[in-house]
Image 1 (spheres, rainbow, N blue to C red):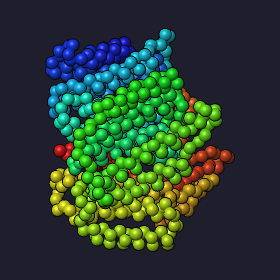
Image 2 (cartoon, rainbow, N blue to C red):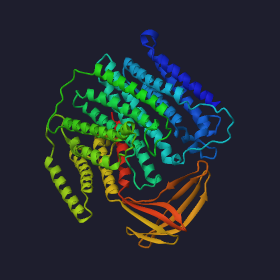
Image 3 (tube, rainbow, N blue to C red):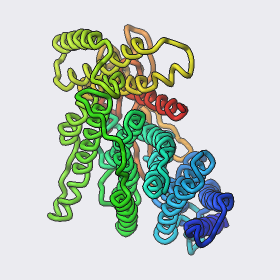
Image 4 (tube, helix red, strand yellow):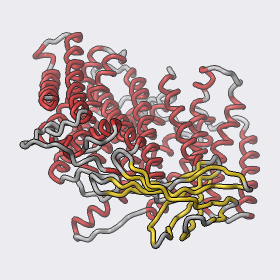
Length: 621
């Protein structure tokens, strides 16, 4: 019954959205009734999505999608997250979010009625396109032709609290750019010349980018503790797919700041808005089509992938066609000086887009070669580390001083102070690097991250009088965001360059002396959980004879899917993580791998600071 309700609610929502698209010159509909129809469409698509959730929660295996991706023994949280742990359910979630963003815009926007209607029509058009995709190629409400008593279960690797939240967060970012896209296209088609759309685009861009940041961070943290590779980023193709709209969105957010000082950047803003959503759709195609090999990808289906590719060309083609035809022309000249704020932001934007194109090339190049030569090639970390990082490096350097530059002049206030601190910092880092294990990238990363933090703090103290108030936090918010970036860079540098790896064969009772601590292998425990069997090795962590904590690496066996997953044991500390994975057993001798990851917590702290800054930016008027 829930499947029938879900399908017909989806169809009804699509019909209403199609009605919304009929030109006002034909319907002569009033704004009040227009908004009512838009909100009804959102209501029905939400009912459709909740119907699928209800089917999962109640283990309704008459629904083919539930049968394929759930099991009656699963905990409630994984029954719910199973809804978007598959192709059909995740695309329905995508569709639902497109409509919800339109609803929120209709409630919050203070734009003129004509412009609001235009934005919602474009948003409704996007909704209809994806609704047709769901209804005709990816229907999550198909009914089994025979009676089914039990399901096949959810992929065990997806049964994790962080990964339960990770896809919705990513989608809130990806789909949020659909509204940014609609605002940009509407700004080209509107008849008046007001700039109110810039303010709204700035807010929705920051919301989308903030969610995308949180989604990527959750995915990285999940990969860190779940996959047992000892790291948090592997330049996996699906990771690259999420990184491209994130970098483009970052360029868009910074470009929107330039509107305060210069007006002529509007073309670039519209271009980036179209590009952000286009990259989101392209990423969906690459993940769903099955042409990418990735630990993150699922639901491989070439025919459905081609349908998404068609949507990509349709949406991107329409967006850029309107951009070329209706591109704004009458604007102020850019006030480009050697070292003013506008110049710095434009250079940073260019570097970020070059980085995006470099990542895109490295991601799709293996696909092109395989199609042409039928030979699979691999493009991994060495390529991206040697190309993307050097491209972004000058941008990070500009980041440290850009907030203190002037819009109109070359002057930097109290320039000598920055020079003195930079020289002192460089000397300290140079001495530290010389007397430890010197590494060029480590030296660059440490001095870069430290300088971004130092320059931002100096700027705060020189320019603003301290005050314990929300207003004070708002006016220093750009510096807070850059401090977060600096902290993250230090975390990335130390955890990547100075990571230590050890391999041991141990038996119960053995002790390992490593990095000034002692690990004692105490026992192996096997526990029967509700839907899996848990095997854990218990390591007692001691320092100077005192018990610090227990570290419990292990494995989980899922009998329904007959899969084994690795569960890393991690001791988190402010200065380092002790990371253990459990390998094979040979006559009670266990192979273990231990990683010492210094300052890796700085990555999550830096990301948290950036997300906090994005929230403040949204609240900022």
